[in-house]
Image 1 (cartoon, helix red, strand yellow):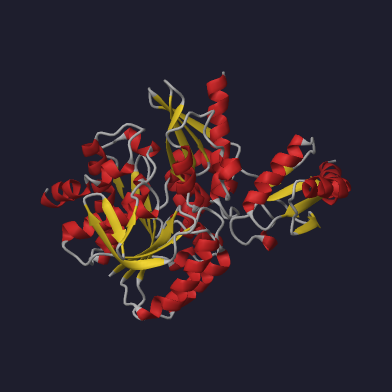
Image 2 (cartoon, chains in turn purple, green):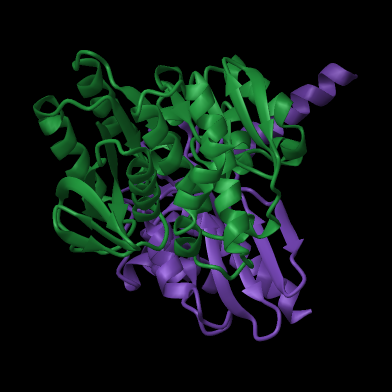
Amino acid sequence: MLHLFKRRERKKRDRESVDSGILIFAVTSDVISGERILKKNGWPIRVMGPPSEIQTGCDLVIEFPLMEKLDILRTLEREGISPISVVPVSSPLLKPVDLFVLKDFGEYLMARAANMKITLAKEDLRIVNISGGGCPDVPYLAYQMVGKPLLEAPQPRDIGQTLCAYALQLAYEELLKKCSR
Amino acid sequence: MLAIIGTVPIQDFPITCGRICLTGMNLSISDTAVDVNRGTAALMAAAAATCNFLGTEQPYGFLVGDIGHGKGSRNLYKFFCTHLPDYSFNTLTFHYLQPIAHWHNNILAAIDAVAPRPVTIADAGFMYAAKMSGYARRYDLFTPDVGELAFLADESAPHPLYTRGFLLHDENRAEQLIERAYAHGNAATVLLVKGRRDLVVRNGKILHTISEPCVEALEAIGGTGDTITGIVSALISSGMDRVEASVKAAMANRIAGSLANPTPATNVSEIITMIPNALSSLFSG
């Protein structure tokens, strides 16, 4: 019985993987823009890590339903974004973190996602610090965001380029959620 | 002599190399002023402050502008590989650079060609590249924070963004993460783990735990991890044993943090200003 269950699970997984493709872009900022455009258009896509055989460094890919390939490519093209490659999913993809930590400092609140931390003053929701990370756009993001109110600061997804920027966006959204409650 | 290799968040900043000079909070490299805020500039300022205190040779810097596109990092990787044989560094500290496996491997090959081999220290993006490339064991010192320790412990993660949840949950159990990082060959010989408790580890064994003075606000302040890496780099370059240098750097950073009496809104430059006093109290005590 267990054997039968495992076989069915395997078949299900195989079917799922054959149905999916990944869009590979030259730079992470195109992935971040592509995600925004496709989600706005209602496509069921996910930002994931590439399979190990195509990892080169600071990589993200967009997983999409393979059957919708042409429509999705047209949507991206209309916005001036083109992937450098589109391939079916052949091995497991890595999932970005979905675990967030909030730390209360009294007058300040900090959110952390993976290696990135963002802190705001509770009184006026001004971003007071950004720490962590290792990609070169982290200091740039800090220069652009620190000192500005959370809702008025540029978002990492709009001005960031790397996986650290993507992690900072997740932490930023966590603070936004907390502050809108 | 210590060399520090990294980036500044200014797109058109050209490759600049030369002696690092710190006067007050004015940092310059080869007569080019650099804003001390966070990132590699904070690391350089902390290293220069430590060298000033020790009376040792000022560090040498290799800087380029990069705001995340990676072009500046690639240019600097290429420049450094070409010019490394022209210098005689005893310690190399790699910092905020775009993590690119291919270029990391070229850098490692260039270092291997140098005799005697310098002490190699990696933090931030270059540490990610070292781990992703599978060559972490070739390094003398990594300086991860606890989140990055979970990344080192996750053998399948090419970047901290992909660290699996069960490892992130384990952050309070640093011992297990350290064991796992070493078991998979994803740690340098010595680790200085920066966190609520700073841990100094050699070959998987925790040798020292530093937890006082405890300044909670430091976690939120951008650049406080960079300053520890700067201090430890300067101490190692002065000839100090790596484990002892790691302990002293962790303590000095905590004391400097405590002297600055910071809030989570404090700028790291206020802490760097306190490094000479912190070192003075540490070495006289």
